[in-house]
Image (cartoon, rainbow, N blue to C red; front, side):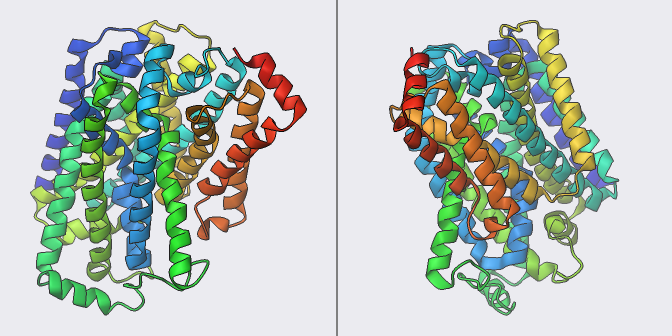
Length: 475
């Protein structure tokens, strides 16, 4: 009973924070999707990290670490390194172009980057973006429902519906401002929950030294270079880490994360926002991976155990009811902080990029949010995939479509509308085929997807037909 009340109290706090954004609502699309470019650096950083550290971190990463062991650290090192490299190249320029173009969506900024409109690209990109973002949102709702299923024995549909309902309440109230404010609160709950569980778990095993000794006794669990990598030893680990570096670099292709940096009140304060983001991100990812390792000691029955339920199951074993409620709130906060961002980005893609522009009526903006939430909930209820697989599919797909074009634009390229479409199609198809043929076990599919998109641009520069198309469509 105490677990339920603790959980409900935290959820109530998130909803109240989101609803309070109504006091600052300007009731137009720029405010609904970009908070009128008025967000402070610390809020941008905490919101972006909460959006990134989603149910994937609480459910997917911990489940993955439970299964593979110490080699999961290569994922963390590669991901954070790639994310940091990408931020050095992209964030400031994207914020500047947002202000210059006056666009309210990520796709809108890309399609207007060169000064002229690319309506066909914008609509096609919005269609693909909608599909992948809704799949991603469904994964977050599914992650939250798994936690509620373990702790309260709720059916999976009830947890997913609860998450969708809460997201809808505060997104309809205040748009992205509500999302960012609740993200900041959720960041505090998420890192507190993970830190408490890590501390209790290590203490329960007799301290740090005893914990390391017990981990070493698990067969093949503490191996930096496992035998199942594509290539043995250091070479395989480096290739594996390189793939995940590109997974981190793929963050700049995620509209729901990048829009946080687009809302920054002053582009000159980007470094301060990034400092908040990376300090919080590194600490949280490290703790999540360590908890994943420890979960194998507390839950050794790997043959019949769903690894993605490791965290809530472990919390039940180790913590008193009030703190179990905190852990559940942390898991749910992680899923909500990403789900609301995905739903709002999907709504922006629908109303601003796919449908005719200048949709300013508040009821139409909110109707699109309601529709997107309903579709994401249905997808979550019907899905048979794991959270980890669904997130990676959406993440790599978005990266393969948008990262090649964004990099080309930032480095001074001027692709025509035809070339931009071809780049996105080539990147997405390459990533999908890479996963279909099972090559993602060797290297993250976003890497060949990004390379394929860039290769299409380089090829187009040397083909007469593409050169002519570029001259015609260039401003």
